[in-house]
Image (cartoon, rainbow, N blue to C red; front, top):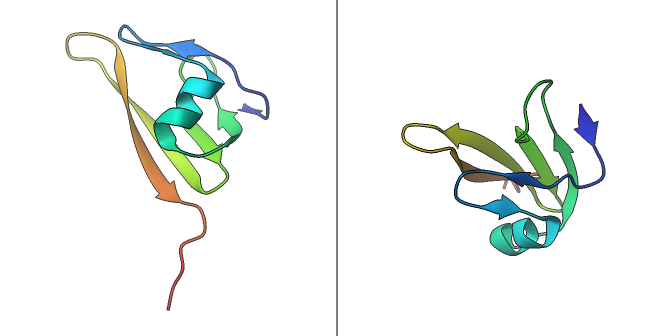
Amino acid sequence: MILCEWRDFSTDTDTYTKEHFEELVGDEFEAMMVEEGKQIPSYIWTSNFVCLLKTNSKVYNDISITKIFRNPVCE
């Protein structure tokens, strides 16, 4: 489900609020996609990026965030 309002989420190492996430990625939140039965979003859209969130679960529950430009410039 795609949400246009921020929903806080947590890992074992951090709690992600809208303000904390925007500071972390350096951009403004627009929407997030949360899959059914999951607490952590799979994708977060910002003004300039699509952020892919991947769960790292070897020892503790944590995530990695990969930023991809929304509108790449091709010359």
